[in-house]
Amino acid sequence: MERLPNGRVVVRASPGLARAMSEMIPTIASGATVESAPDVGTGFVLASGDGRLEVDATLDTRLSHVWPRLAAAALAEVRR
Image 1 (cartoon, one colour):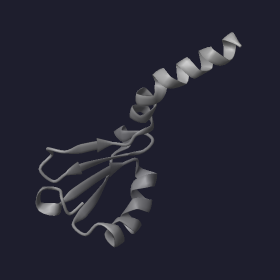
Image 2 (cartoon, helix red, strand yellow):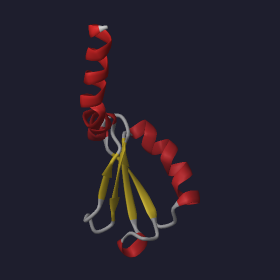
Image 3 (cartoon, rainbow, N blue to C red):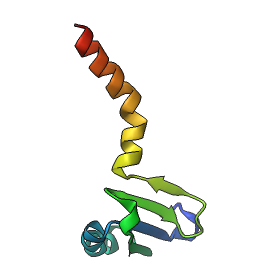
Image 4 (tube, rainbow, N blue to C red):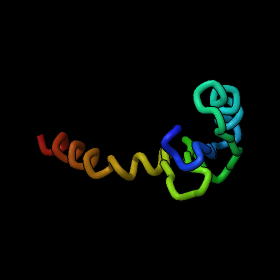
């Protein structure tokens, strides 16, 4: 995280996850802040302080990336 602009990171997460991350983040990333964001859903979003970099680690986004492979694997199983 020290490679991010200003070394500042903002973590947005659902309220329950934000509470847990608030306790954990200071030990692994100095200068990081955690925001409770009900709209994030399951998972979290990391962003650089200036907003130029963002990592979306929400379940919806992660599933959208693997869905084509999952669908192809399911279809292959059905065709057996």
